[in-house]
Length: 443
Image: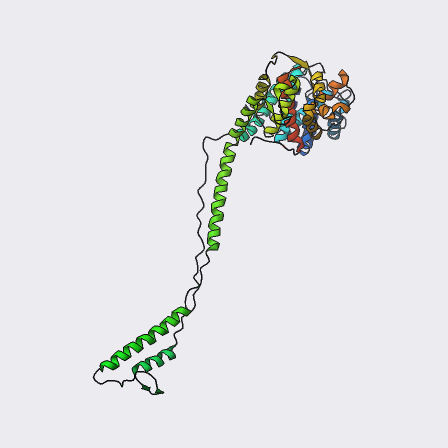
């Protein structure tokens, strides 16, 4: 599938007759520039992506919403006289440039996650028949790119490539030695003593026999013995003084040990990264089969079904990475349906489901997380914003309820749909808010 190119969204709105610029390319340029400004805002503040999307999706979006006001202000900077072309606040134009901005900014994966999650939640309930052809291609293209990114964190390679251990070449070992010093004078004196009783320098106190003329046996014997002893003693003394010192092998051994340790560590890391996807899937299968909530420390079987569905969404969110493929939501859908005695056809209004989630003691962790991730911005936002506000918020009538989340309070959802809705919003909030949270991840 070819990606949606920049500015193609605006052109599609024009082609569908949803925006009329009377064929003025200069006006189109101003809209394109305004969309670029909004895209820059999104890249700088991805947390606005969900609110931007919820207004962009809704043909009946209120013109008093903070997002509408922000987009109008941006448009006015680029096109001060737009009021001469459109009557009042041109919400279709505002929505078109918001959508264009979202498409341009979706190169940032966090914006892409927010866009796709919001689309999957609310678009099926929006009255946007005239725009259906635009939405289908845009959402499918961005979701394909987001899924491709997510699959990288879940992939398990067929083989693991391990680099060869680097060759360790220790520095040459230097053997410390002392210089050998032969005491020539002492050796000469000993040899003189071995040769005879007297020398030119005087008595030697040595060989008592005179130098022989006919190889006197006694003299030869005495000379050989004394000469051997003199030479042996002198050499032994020299060798003792030149004896090598102790050899320190600690440095090359430490170097070798560090290299081996780093190599083994790199191997273990490669194996861990390569098998993390498999380990994660294994943990999720175990979670599904046990139907046990690690956050509430209770069996889902023992909880009211709407509470169990919402808790499953929260527990799954805590076990998976921020970027997860669409198949993970499908896995959650099937996990909810695995609850005993669940009515597959049961549907509840989103107001009732939200009301139960606000009061359920088992969902206090979900409410706390919602309050941390999605503070109320005063305008339209995710369901998590209402959930995080808890019972302290004023009661919302049908009109204000729709104004806050974009769909009617009477909208009917199955329990798997409710769980998927919350899971998508949790992942969107984590990706765009960059809020750290404690969790027991399966990776």
